[in-house]
Length: 149
Image (cartoon, rainbow, N blue to C red):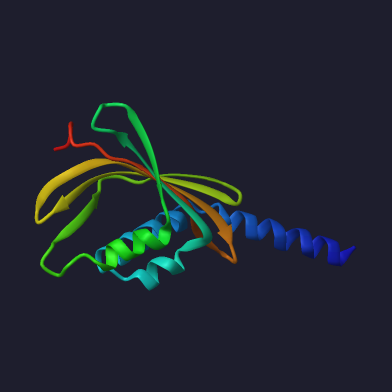
């Protein structure tokens, strides 16, 4: 009986710890720090093995477009940005929601290239509590050029 109580206590404690919203936010902050430093190895450490990435926007004809890219392609594009290009994704806010082993971090942003705004939108990070840390398993964003600062 004592073992069962101890086991229940350990499981309960790990679930409570997983529900700390600040930890999920810190993973997203670390992701963007690595992104801006073009540190693809650090970015890989923050994501789940089977991460999915999508973007929502409009095609040239104006219809809604949902595009999917692989995380490896994303990393290659980040690593391939020349030193002469200054890029910055400015996160305007963090809205974090957590339920047990799942977290959602919503981050409105503005994206700048060489100090000029390129586009803006919202990132949505879906996270899973895995091996005592939050891992990003899905990123979807919106991208638009109208309505940006």
